[in-house]
Length: 322
Length: 81
Image (cartoon, rainbow over all chains, first blue to last red; front, side, top):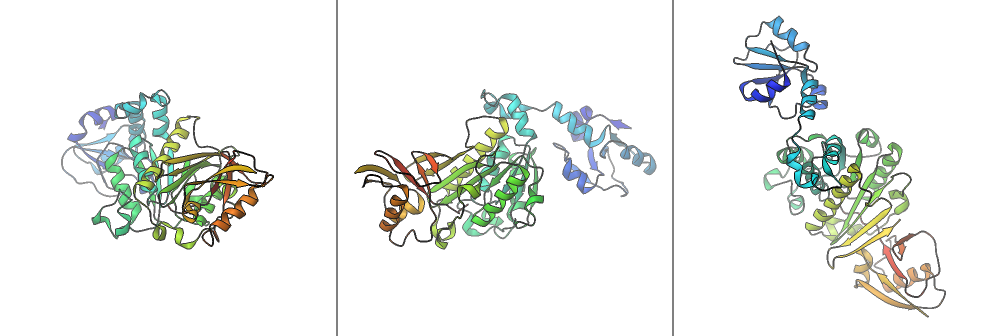
């Protein structure tokens, strides 16, 4: 027996949905909007009640139902592939109506956001607000890269984490919180330390890189990878009440290496020693997210070839032409 | 003599203790001359801090002669995130 994506969508609460695919397929093609249990191909399925089995193309599950003689079981016609197509065709964009009404965004812009992928390196002060804003704006795919764990002193400026999360790995907690904000966003996480050995692999297949790191070395590596893979880098940096943002490496525009050829500062100028008020990373991380959205949608007024400097103490800004 | 304005951000602001300052410089003073003056005013506080420069909101990579009314921003790299 088979069930079509349309019928499954209408009656999904009447079925237990069983995903028989491999972990690679599940990660690459998630069943958006479906609560499923996992029973990889080869396992015996002996659940009672009405159930729908899902494989990648709807062929394997038809065979499983016949071979195992499973009662009250349906195969999803066309499998996960058909479900994803069905979801795309029947997307309810009303969730984003307050931003799609903006003429520069519109439905076409929202669709671009839904199909885009943004990678964020560093899930700290800048990464948290940037990821939060991108997820709720409907960016369809996010990749979060950080090997850090949550500490008590992070909580005043990293709003994705709570007291109970202290000691847990940032990327996994962030993924879970962001999925709560927008269950339809596909979030990949990697808890590796970003360096020049894994940088290229971690950032391949992404549309935009958000630099939310906290040191010069990481920024220089991101810059190299951004240039090599021809992927824009949205740089953000903080000092006390101030921040900087720029979109680097777009069609020959300056990169981090050209902007700061030999960056040097005093050891005590990091957030740890110099201090930072939580609202400043909130503002700067959100400006990075704003620039990402503008790039994806195709809004030409942006920070390509410009450096924004913002001082939260006296609200002075400078936009420097690079 | 010419009068120019320096807008101060991050380490420069904290080293000099002001958001901006106006300076009278000799005619034909250059950006490099100005940077020396700023570093002298800061004492040791800008030692080991690299500075990039913007003149009238344009990023500058070479030394040029300053003119009356110019606005200069010294841009230190910031590493927090």
